[in-house]
Structure formats: structure tokens, C-alpha cells
Length: 188
Image 1 (cartoon, helix red, strand yellow):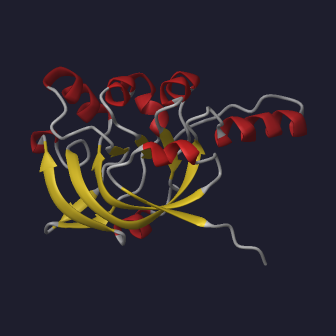
Image 2 (image 1 turned 30 degrees about the horizontal axis):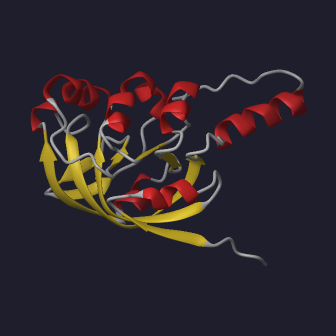
């Protein structure tokens, strides 16, 4: 059996991500910042409360209990399609979530960033690779605050690379060829 190489990355990310290809397996270590809809809107209004240069945003609303991450599954990233550009413009190099993102974000990533996919339904697995380090905007509540999370070898797949290759579009095209009709991408 041939095993695909797993690429080790550490935040903050730099130009090493420009060599990644859609479909590459990655283990990411370092620090990530969670952000869902309300956090994006707050950061647009009040500013980014962390250094965005080389940062990674995880579309996630973790479950925190007694200063410990219990579950940290990804949120559907498409919800942040219209909200991600300003972060990428300020130096964020990667987004993590599930379900992919639209063509606008794919173009915003071109030449400067990537989208990592993490499998939905694996919230406990994600949490087992994480340590809580702090929080910004706690008044937004557990699901919407920006959590500062240390990660150790979080397993990811490059869903959209910096050249614009997109695993999610490839699946859509394959479904169209196979079934003769375009399948709608529904995100839950």
C-alpha cells in the first residue's frame, strides 16, 4: 500500500503554503483563531484583535468546559464567503472549515493563501489536538467568540490551493459528468 506524504506545517504560515496542492494532506501545529459570522463582523467593525500576518482562521464554534476544549468541529465555511476577504487582505494565510468556499474566496486566496478542509462530525478528534490559550470578544458567547487555540498536528486536507485548484469544484464536476446534471452543494 502506498501512503501519501503528510506535510508538516507550523503557524504563522509563510510562502511555504504556495507549494501546496489541492488534495495534499497536512498536519498543522501552532496557533489558530476561531471565527464564525459574528466574530468576522466584529473584526470588520472594531479591528482584528491578533496579528493577522501568517495567521490561520478556523471556522468553528468550539465547546469549552472548565477551560478545556471538549469539541471543536468545523462550521460550514460558505457562511463566511462574503466576510473573509478583509482577513486575507491583512495577511491571514489560511482558512479551515468544511464544505469549501465560493469562487470569490478562491480568487482572494490566489497567490497568497489556502483553504484547509477538516471533516465534519469529527469534533472530538479536533479537540484532542487542541489546547485553549485565550479568547477575544468573550461577550459574543462561546460559539461566536474568537478563541485562541494551540494545535498539535491537526490533520487537514488542502481543499483550495493558492493556484485556484479546488477539490470541491472537482467533486461537483465529477457529479455532473457521472449523473448528467449539476448537483447542488447544500451546506448544513
